[in-house]
Structures are given as C-alpha cells and as structure tokens.
Image (cartoon, rainbow, N blue to C red; front, side, top):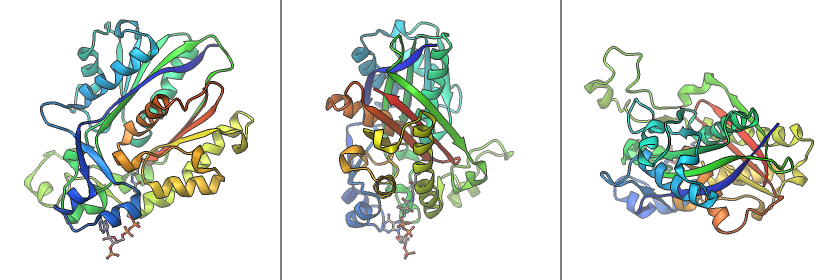
Length: 332
Ligand code: COA
C-alpha cells in the first residue's frame, strides 16, 4: 500500500486588510471585545472583480505546485473545499480546472465547511493509497465577507470571519515511514441549525423573497455558545482518537494545527491536552476564521517559516458547521 505525503503548500489572501477598528464604524463593537472573545485583530476582505473563490484557490495552488516541483499537467485530481462557491453550480473545482493548464481531470467539491480541508485530505489519501491517483491538489478557499452583515444585529458572527485560500499538493510516497498516518471524520446533523446559512435553499418554492431578506434569513445564523461548547469537547476527542489509532500518545505530538475558529477555543484545547504554546499554531489574529482555508493557510505559513521538519508528528484538527469534526495525523 502507498503512503500520501504533502509535498507542496501555498496560500493567497486578498490585499484588503480590515481591522477591528474598521468594524467599529459599522456596528456596536470594540477592538477590545473582539480581541478578548476571539483573539482576532484583523481579517482580509476580497475585492470584487479581482478575487473569486476559484481564482484565489488557483493562486494558492500555483505556489503549492511550484513548491512541490510539479506543473498543473502533473495533477490527477482536484478536491475543492468551500462553503462559498463562485456559483451554486457548477462546483468551484471545475472552475479551478479552467484557471490553470490542468488536464481534463476529475474535480470534486466538498461541502463540510470548517472541516472541508481535512475531509479533502482524507479523500486524497484514499485515492493515493489504492493506487488510483499519484498527485492530488486539495484546496480550501472562501469568500465570506459578502455574507457578513456589518451591523449590530449580526455582530457576533460578522467579527469572526474573513476571506482567504490555501492549497496542498498530496503525492504518492514510497517511504512508508512518512506521510498521512490516518484521518478521522465525524458528523452530527442534529445540530445543523446551530451554524447554518439556510437561504437560498431548495426546500422553498421561492428560494429567495423579500420576506426572507427582511427577516435576515439570507444571512448565516450561529448559536455561538453551542458551537463553542461542542468545539472544546470534539477537538480533544478527535485529536486523541487519531493518536490512539496509531498507538501514539499526546507526548509523541510535536505540532497541533487546529482549525482557526476562535483563539479561546484553541487555548482551551491546548490546555486540556497539556500542550505548550510552541506546539500549537495559531494565526487567527491576522486572518480571522477563513473556514476551509484556515488549515492550509496555517500549514503554508509553517512551511515558509521552515517549521515543518522531516520526522515531526503533526496533527490537523477541525470542528464546525454540520456539526462536523475531523483530524489527520501526519508524520512529516
Ligand atoms: N461586539 C460587542 N459585543 C458583542 C459582540 C460584538 N461583536 N457580539 C456579541 N456581543 C455581546 C452580546 O450581545 C452579549 O451581550 P449581552 O450580555 O448584553 O447579551 C455579550 O456580548 C456576550 O455574548 P456571548 O455570546 O455570551 O459572548 P461569548 O463570550 O460567548 O462570545 C462568540 C461570542 C461568538 C465569540 C463565541 O460564542 C464563540 O466564539 N463561539 C464559537 C464561534 C465559532 O467558533 N464559530 C465558527 C465555528 S467553526
């Protein structure tokens, strides 16, 4: 059986920086509240006409491909995770396929929100292990600033999210000691409405109406406390599950790269697991929550800082809308 290895990483974030002070102009909030409750200091918002989810994914992919020493024609399959596709259909993977000179390869969109990148990595791992594909591109890309109502009624949600993209090249490796050791995927649909964007959906005859807009139901809804409570339980669970599945313990772990939902969540998870500050990577301060893109952006930054050393044990973990939660354990 083959092993899958991440051999290249890249990210792209829009140039438009929005600070907490910028948000104070639109809603009753403060830089202090946002920093204390989430750790976020700034985020990026896309520029219409310049950035699209698939184009941002393509920019991140170009860097990841270059670092892996591959060209678009070498890629066998595209996996694209996003909750904010360019179009309702077709999927953003197909749109990415036309942005770079790929062959006429398969392109799959993933809709598991914050866990999308890990779900994508898991799918890539299975295709590589079975020998079906050799080189797979896994992309997470989001434009969320245009579903944030910058107003006081939506302030708990609006201050948390940002736009960005990250990409990873996953390749077949002949070295059995390195690569993705295992992935672990979960969902619990009974909490779907605790973090949801319902409209436009297919369950109404009129997918969009004035009433829906007046009631603000075209905007995302989040029961923040419920998400927080489940997240701090599921993160440690799924990290320990990954370690146990490989007969390892938390003492073997070198680096945890958690989905960037809230710095307080990351800190509580770190505390529960007894990890040091230098063992948990956080960059939510600079980008906010970029949903499917947080983990590949974080990994790209670690790569650029030369912090991903061969032989390190790295765990990726995420929790989000669905609810879904997931982990991937990697021997770098
Ligand atoms: N600025 C200022 N005040 C705000 C605010 C904002 N942006 N958003 C909410 N508030 C107010 C509330 O209205 C509330 O006021 P009240 O006490 O007068 O009613 C007060 O702050 C406390 O609200 P609460 O919701 O209890 O705060 P919290 O400490 O739970 O933090 C979240 C709110 C959203 C930051 C927190 O619940 C959270 O991070 N949840 C998880 C979110 C998440 O990770 N989502 C993505 C999952 S992938």
